[in-house]
Amino acid sequence: MELCRYLFGRFKEAGVRHVFGLPGDFFLPFFRALEEEPGIEPVILTHEPSVGYAADAYARVQGLGVAAVTYGAGALNMVNAIAQAYAERSPVLVLSGAPEIAHRDPDALLHHRVKTFASQLRVYREVTGAAAALDDPAYAVAEVDRVIDSVLRTKRPGYIEIPRDMVRMDVPVPARREQEAKPRDERAASEALAEVLARIRVAELPAIYAGAEIRRFRLHDKLVALAEKYGLPVATSLDGKAVFPEHHPLFVGNYLGEIGSPRARKVLETADCVLMLGALMTDVNTGMYTARFDRRKVISAFHEGVTVSYHRFPDVSLEDLMDALLTQPDPLKRTAPLPPPLTPPPAPAGTLTPDAIIAVLNRVAAGRPVLYTADVGDALFASVELETDMFLGPGYYSSMGFAVPAAVGAGLAAPGRRPVALVGDGAFLMTGLDLVTCVRLGLHAVVILFNNQSHGMLAAMDGPAKSYELPAPDYVRLAESLGARAFRVRTPEELERALAEALEDVVATILIEAIIPTGTYSAPMQRLGAIVHRLRSR
Image (cartoon, rainbow, N blue to C red; front, side, top):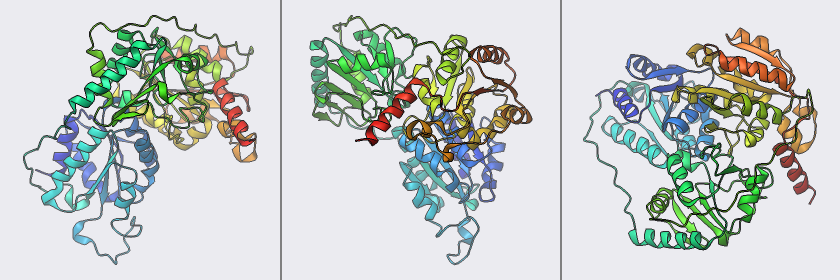
């Protein structure tokens, strides 16, 4: 079988219907073969970072994303996007072209080559869970299987480098060996479950804190069932936002220590037993380490193991624990009343703030089949108060430029939902040209541009500075030149009218430029700035 055909077969097995990429000379045979393959569509973006972000978003929704780029100038231009996917545990497969095996002269000064022919492979080994260069036809299929199986199992990116003369080479396809299941230690699982149940049964105010691994390992439905079975309130981390439906009566908010939802903070910090499910204790999720967890009261479960206070069970996974809790007969269900939702103070009349943007979204988009992608800055932090059941954002690694290409990837992975991208002007200047990709693909995305003419997050933490100021291009005319409709709004009332019209227009991609006064921040961003100032003054 041709090597490329074997790859395409593995993609289809995993439900991949789109491959994101940017062609280059060392990978032209691959893109030609991809165009000929029925059932998989090549999606060409404007720049390699956008390719990585789009594949990342597709992976978070669908379960596997594929990014295909050329050697050197292509793949090395995408390293940052894949580093984010690694840090945030997203199953992205990187395919890179490479010079022909037959023509590799170690002394040749070949274009796109950095140092040696192996330099790029070494770089990608640092930002992936498995990597391979297919330089031997006899082992090519085994290496493909090893890398793809690793990506699907661990939810970490993988890397496969394919020399140009290998793409359409006939390679032997041995019988597929089933992956050996990790042996389950039943005694450890029983002991872990007994400890967890004992904690939950005696607790008066137990609660769940859920994170990104719930989405990565497709555990959303089990999380809802678990919360309802035991009557437990649920808060989520920022990188795990919307892993639990935010309209659910047991949802109490996004917890980020002092930065996030005050309601979520009250529930988790007064809980006498916290069931922490797939939530990473990053500086962002903990609100710059202002989170207050007493380890003696925490049950922490991840894909790699469960810890009950100080007692670790490395052979019991997050899913193992959730399954065991769900199979318990007649658990003691908690009915403690939840603190009432807090009513945010009204925005000053006529002023468009990040909080006002979120409030308008909560009113106008409620009940509509949308998915949100958010970029770093107030587009992300203001979203603490956004009510949604599908949200993608770089809540841990925090690389700018994610939201617009992520709308491409997520929109293709979930065709029944309308992508709504929340993006600051700084991030839009990086990857916003992929608005034209949304137009070309007919994705009907809505992009809300938070325009405060600055890198606002930096100014919120450090005060105004010339270095943080941004130019003010005419974003409306730019969007229209790319084939999108566009609005410019300056008040919540104007935004509400524009958003309602945008969501009713089901055939256009639409940009809404929201003019926010420079120096105006959401309540979560203000709290973040205050914490940073406090830490620096010590």
